[in-house]
Image (cartoon, rainbow, N blue to C red; front, side, top):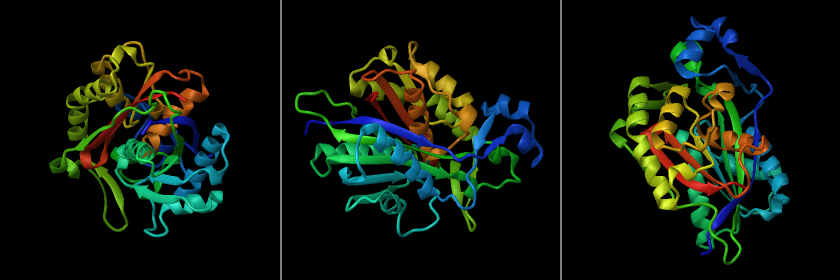
Amino acid sequence: MNGSRITAVGHYQPAKVLTNEDLAGMVDTGDEWIRTRVGIRTRHIAGPDEPVDELAAHAAAKALAAAGLAPGDIDLVLVATCTAVDRSPNTAARVAARLGMPQPAAMDVNVVCAGFTHALATADHAVRAGAASRALVIGAEKMSDVTDWTDRTTCVLVGDGAGAAVVEACPAGEEPGIGPVLWGSVPEMGHAVRIEGTPARFAQEGQSVYRWATTQLPAIARRVCERAGIAPEELAAVVLHQANLRIIEPLAEKLGAVNAVVARDVTESGNTSAASIPLALSKLVERGEVSSGQPVLLFGFGGNLSYAGQVIRCP
C-alpha cells in the first residue's frame, strides 16, 4: 500500500499529417476559421492498415524502453480507447500480443476523452492493493475512423495517436507519485458528446460542452489539487484533455496555475480523445519542459460528460 508512480512515458503518431489547408479542399472551411475557433493547425491521420492496437503498441514500446523494462515485466495492461472496432479480443490483449507479454491482465477502459486519467487511477488502485506490480497504461484512438469528413464542425477537430505510461509501485518510504483521483460525470448531459450509429460517427453539442468545461470544470480541477495537497501555483505543468484551445486556455487560467507550463498539443495533434493527455505529457517530458519529480496536473473531460484528474510527479 505504498502507492505508485509513473516511471516512464512514450507516444506515437501516424506519419500522415492533415493540415487546415488540406481540409479546406475537402469541406467548406479554412485555416483562419479553424485556428480562430479551436486553435488547431494540423493533425495526424492513421492509414487503413494502422489499427488502434498498432498505434497503442508503438507508444507502449517507447514507454517500456524509456523505463528500461522488458514486456514480461508488465503484469497489467490498461488501454483507454473509444474507437476500437472489435469487441474481442480487446485492444489491451492485442497490444500484449504484439509486444510479446506472457500473461498480463488486459482490460480496455472506455471513458472517451477522460479515459486515460480513469485508466491511470485504476492502475494506481491495482498497484496500491497489491493486484499488480507494474502496469502499462495507454490512451490510443483512431478518431478518423468515426469521423464524418463532410461535417466541417467535427472533422476539423480530430486526430489519431497514442500515448503510454509505465506505472510501478513506489519504494518503501517514498511519497506516492500519483495523487488521489477525483472523478465523476454528468449523466443527464451524456448526449452532448456522442459516437453512435452504424457506422459509428462522432457528433457533439459544441456550445453545451464549451459552457460546461469553462464554467464547471475549473472548480473541480482545483479540488483535484486539494486532494493532492498541492496549490495550483505550485504546479509545474497542466495537461488538460486537448479538446480545443478555447477550452484549455480559459480553464487553465481560472485554475490559477500561474507558474505552470500549459500543454497546447491540440494545435499540432487535434483532439485525440483518450490519447490526448499521455501524448501531450510525453511531449513535454521529451522536450524537457518539465523536470523529473515536479508536480503535474492531469485532467481529462468530455464524452459521457465524464471527468477524472490527479496530480502526478513527472517521471
